Amino acid sequence: MSVVMTFRIALRALSRNKMRTALTMLGMIIGVAAVITMVALGNGAQQTIEDQIQSAGTNVIIVNAGNWTVGGVRQGQGMSNTLTEEDAAAIRSQIAGAQFIAEGVSTSAQIVAGNQNWFTRIQGTNIDLPLIRSWNTEQGTFFTPADVNSSAKVCVLGTTVRNMLFGETVDPTGQVIRVRNQPFKVLGVMASKGQAAMGDDQDDTIFAPFTTVQKKLRGITYVNNITVSAVSASQIKKVADDITTLLRTRHKIQPGDPDDFMVRTLEDIAAIRTEATKTMTALLASIAGVSLIVGGIGIMNIMLVSVTERTREIGLRLAIGARGRDVLLQFLVEAVVLSLLGGFIGIGLGFGVSRGLTQFLEWPTSVSVDAVAVAFGFAAATGVFFGFYPARKASALDPIEALRYE
Image (cartoon, rainbow, N blue to C red; front, top):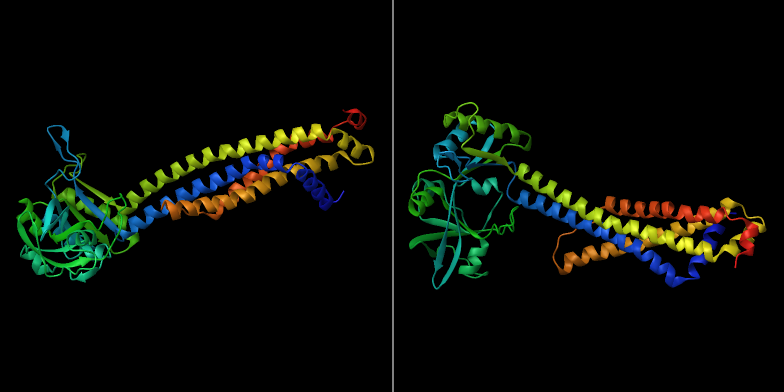
């Protein structure tokens, strides 16, 4: 019997019980759609993480104060006061691969402008930060080296702060805001940056010279962190290692003793979050894959029922000359058609659900070709696997006994 004829007979047999065929495919449809949707959600989350990490800057290395032990008690990140402006100057002059360096001192305060107020972060930094983070000004300008050296009371607003204090269409350049009852002149507004890798709003901040934040707002002489940009991505690890060696020497840390600072790269942070996302995606896809197995069991169940219902038909075909392999192929084709048709519909449903999640719930999704191929291939394999036993059973029927069957 030709393959075309086998397919025609299989399709005709499936069309006799349209409702049963549709319900049988439902498990496969849901399984394939669930796998594609779960993987799309995972890929979307991973892409979002990568975009957020990239938005924080290129080739970035962050040196945080921390790991400070006092009386056997280990303090957390930012608790150490041993990271200084002189450390940043040493990195600037002694680390060949360090291109830009920005000292960082941060605090939070209620900001007042006219009759409006807003609680936000004040980040003390220097003129290299916009270069490190590829962050331009939307209105006005950033502060100058002279402002840093003189501890000038000037600042640049993030767009969220600008919107809350002045309105979205207002240019606040030249206006005066009050930070802890001290007047600060607004020099400009940074372009919108969006959400950070850890979920914070990067635009909900104010930038000021780090010397100003040190002396006028916090009354300290140390810095909380130093942000460094390596010359190239290939030199990130070397620069990070060189910074660690330099700071251990400057801080007189003995061999074997823990650092009183932390050196991290954005690639490290991205790798940790991406690995966690991949694990969660694999878990969700595995759970969704269970429905494919359930769908396969449903196909096997229906095919066994079909064999029982069509026993006399099988006996008649065998009696007039059909071979056992022809019967086996017919029922196997029916099972595979159920799986593949369900797989095709499931792929379409998976694409639709993924797009719906993005459009209506604003969840990032990204449907990958690999996920579609794996889901479709698994659907085909499920049809063959669970359809073989009923097909084998049908082909092994004795023609005489089958014709006697009532």
